Length: 263
Image (tube, rainbow, N blue to C red; front, side, top):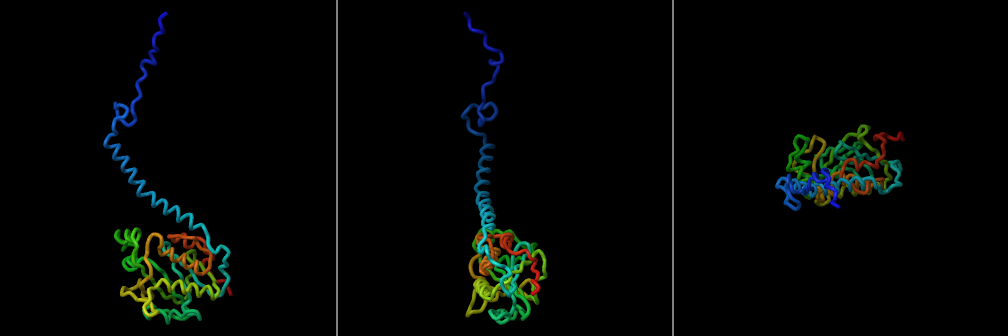
């Protein structure tokens, strides 16, 4: 008995082709040059983007982990403020208190007066001195600040009073002991000679502020907002475990718009 004839449909089924062999290629054939370039570019993208993604993910997680979770932001009589310009958070302290009179500690170039406030910020030396506006930002300054440990600077700005209330302002009221610890933290950001801050020759952004030699290096793990978050920790207030960004530095701060408690 003869076997049944082969099905025409089965006989016409094409042989499977190798995925990497190109059109008409045989299994195991080398990939085309174009495909090799695509693979190389994808690997390079992963190598470059993975550390950035890890950095951003770490910042997002640690921002949400609080320290001093039970602190009372209205627990004292000394009002200090944290003010953001959308990129950088500065710390505002009253000019004259028994714990510190900044008008005597800072040079005359910063016209601090009793009854006013002094705003402090720590950051990248070149960014502070070479980028008064965003139009002045260069690729070199941006890349150095982002990827290399760089020299730091402190900025001190004198104001005649507290900041105008608004979404950009957070008030914290401290007991004198905590305020003293905050003063020590701020002073530690300055490079001192004979107990006095070292004034830099560059002018400030206006007539009421100047730049000083900073202590420590600025880098990806220690930014201007990491410093501001450290100031909140020094106050004993609710702060992020770690953050390099403005959003993280004020993530746990009270949303009181900087308004007075009406004492």
